Image (cartoon, rainbow, N blue to C red; front, side, top):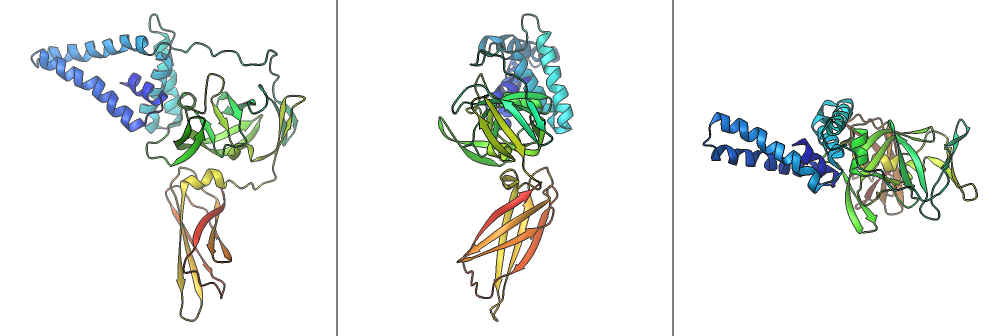
Amino acid sequence: MALWVGIGVLRGLPTAETVGMAVALTALPIIGLWDLFGRRLWGLLAAALLWPALLFAAFPGYFPGELGDALATGFSVFASPAGRDAARSAAASGKALAASTPGHSGTLAPPPALAPARECPPAITLGDDQVALPYEGQGHSMIVPVQFGDAELPMLFDTGASFTTLNAKALATLGVRVAPDAPEVTLHTANGAKKARLTVIPKAWVGGLPVEGVTVALCEECADDRVSGLLGLNVSGQFFVTIDTAAQQVLFQARPAPVDRVNDVQPWLTTEAAITLFADGRGQANVTAENHGARRVDGATVGIHCGDHHLTVDLPAIAPGETSTAAATLPADAACQTYTVTLDHARW
């Protein structure tokens, strides 16, 4: 069952639907075989052994070279409720099981070599807050190495992407699971607009410079045999960036703290405002924000726009699953019968 869940997730299918299809594909034929065997106990045991063995044996014929990745992903999905470490350990077990299977290495064939003929040099540390990353390619196809957890992944440096993206295979390698009910954003890919679910990776490193709490979109169309995804502005925007085309390097210099993380926080924070107007002309705005994510929001600034007025309200820290409220007095001449609410600033 883990094998078919894994291949479904690798194909970008929603996890809940994938689990349901895997259960049906695995369990229903067993029930049918048991019925064929006269519903005897030995028939149930035989069916429970025979059908999964046939599925396992047939898998490489339909998905050549993907046994190891599918098992690792499936094991990771089933172990993810026990935590990130358990998911990563389960993924490693899936890889080992595939590698021990006769006739199967459990791994994909190595990807084609990247375009440059010369070997790409390592990152160059220029100081405590600055690093130079070599890039491969040219023009709008600059590929840079980015560290996520224990894995260094090739990423396409994309100044037009709001969010960093990874494909399902990369997320499974990191032991990261995207929840079926996770927030979604619309990405504009080469194949048109696409809805993508989000997750948060605890930390990424750009040449040794850390970025905490990176919101990542699951996007298969944003990856290929060269890159695992896009390095978006929610990471690169944490730095002053200079592209040195002569040296084929991208220079990243950390911005002075604190750095606004509104792009990363916004999908996980629901903000609302209610305005009360009193008979004496006074007005008050009551703002509420709920944190739907698994990471603490250390502070947020909500903007209320009515007419020519822009009122900002600062909210205190919000723990995961918790709600924070704050109130502010409206300007005396602000009627505010209609208004809009925005999340102007936020930080983890």
